[in-house]
Image 1 (cartoon, helix red, strand yellow):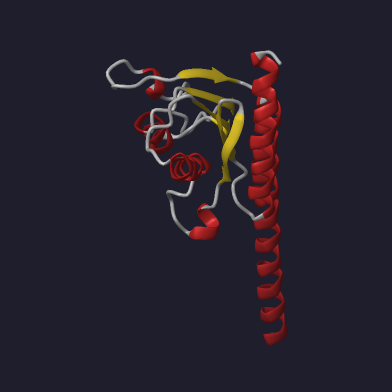
Image 2: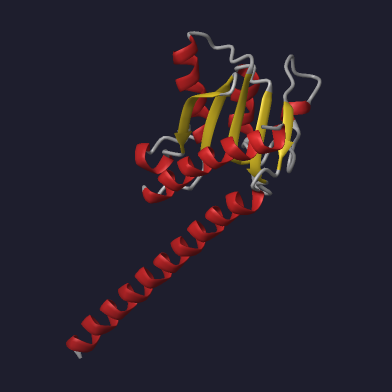
Length: 174
C-alpha cells in the first residue's frame, strides 16, 4: 500500500470514531494513533458526555497511546484526525513528540495547524511535525456539516414547540 492509500485507510478508521461521537450527540471528530502500521489508540470527542473541555479526540488518543507505550514520547507514530487540531490539541501533539499528523477537514475558526496558526511547523518549538492535510476532507467536513445542520434544526423545532406551548397556555387563559 502506498502512503496515499495508507492515509485513506487510517482516516476511514478516524471517521468511524467520528460517527461514534455523533451517535452520542458529540461533535463528530475522531482520531486514531498508528505505530508502525498498527492502530494503538482510538478516540472520539467526549466533551458533552464528560462536561470537560479537554476531552477532545486528539487528547484522549494521546493519553491512551502513552499508557499503552509506557512513555509520554510518541515517537514513530502518526496521528490521524478528522478535523484540523485546535491550539490545545496542537500543543499536546508537540509535547508528546508525535512526528506526523494527518487530518481531514480544515477548521477555519480554531485550526492551529494551517488555518489560523502553523503551530506544528513553528521552528521556535523544540519539535515540529510532518503534516498532511485534506485526506478524505470531503467526508470529514460533511459529517460535521450534517451534524451542525441537524443540531440547528433540532434547536429551531424546540423553540417553535416552546412558543406554541406558551401561546396555547396564554390562549387558554383568555
